[in-house]
Length: 166
Image (cartoon, rainbow, N blue to C red; front, side, top):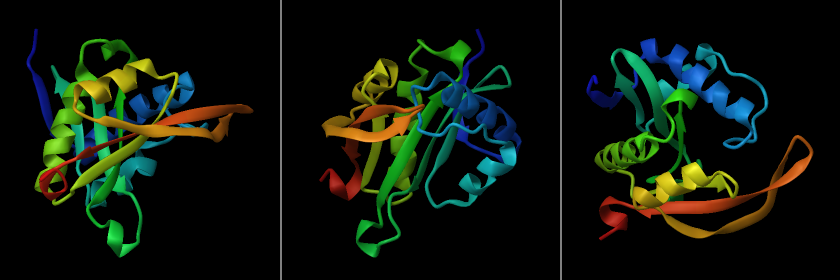
């Protein structure tokens, strides 16, 4: 089996990343978004200050994780909101955990001190990957939003890194 590579995303990865993200949208377990995204929609992610990491094996992108801005308020500089997505046919192999570990290291190198995210309470795979990568549950945000007319609760997760963990 070909070796897994975790690396910074490039423009050539956006088509695969959009396809993986669209699987997450279609599956209705990972995001409140309902409209499919194009590679052009994801292109701004390459310019954000937070890391954008892909997992590649045998020339195919199998998943990605990225850090976006948590807030534009200066007091939250160093806090990143993150997301992780794994292609359907690559799930169940620990790839989400590997992506989160790589993302955490890259975020620390980029000067972040905390990563945070919200995960649907019924997304057991993502919750497991986060916990296996060292993220802690901070609480549950009840009725955080509606998806297809149904209220969804979200688990609030975070990890302290760099100076935040000291």
